[in-house]
Length: 197
Image 1 (cartoon, rainbow, N blue to C red):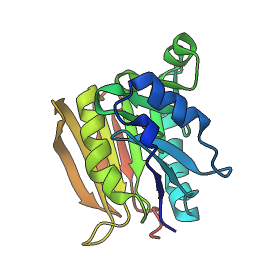
Image 2 (tube, one colour):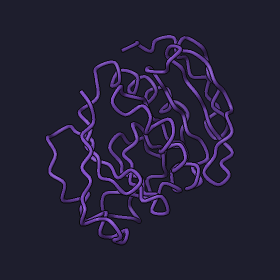
Image 3 (cartoon, helix red, strand yellow):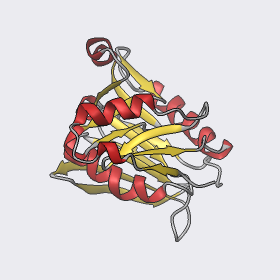
Image 4 (cartoon, rainbow, N blue to C red):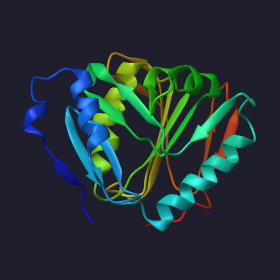
């Protein structure tokens, strides 16, 4: 399946609040992911079983190391208004208090401690390029990209040290390798169990 892109002509030239309103009012089938990527509301089909399996494995490993007052969220909107973006990452790790303080159905992306995106065939370019730039610009300290659709075979890349809309690559490897997440996680993530699509 491919992502459906809905370019609402009423959104061009409008402010952030209008984009968010359109995003909130977009009627998509249950389980679909609705995001704003560079000012365009997009709808993607539900993720595959392999995708969900990887998200679960990462989530289980992270629960072993995160502070009790942080949460791991699978459907949390993360806003990057400066890039006309409102993303729904596969996993967003953030202090629970941020969600309570913000209310609504999204938080500023800058409030996340770690974002994990797992590519799908239909949206891999968004995760690799557009969202990476958005998360960096927002100042998300760590971005973990799990790319089962990489041209040379499944890869895992940890980005950090954001400057502007660019991250530094902290680790790049293939499925099956250990990847070290730095403090505050201090976790060696074993990707050996990750299924390939």
